[in-house]
Length: 88
Image (cartoon, rainbow, N blue to C red):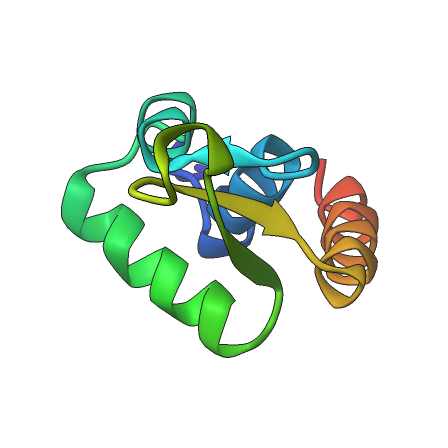
C-alpha cells in the first residue's frame, strides 16, 4: 500500500511552484499546507542552496520579504517535476 503522505520532494516542488513570481511567507505557509516550523526548515534549506532568494518588499519599507525562485531553483523545479512524473 502506498503512503498518502507527501514526500519532501513534493513539498519542495509545491513551495518552488508557489515562489515562481514571488511569495510572502504566509502564502508559502498556507498554500504549502505546512506548519511554521516546517516552513522555517524548508526556507533555510532552499535559501542556503540558492534555490530561493529573499527579496525585501519595497511597499512597506523592506519590513517583510518575498521569496522568489532563482535560475538554479527553476532548473531544480523542472528536474523535480520530471522525476515526480515517473512516480505517478
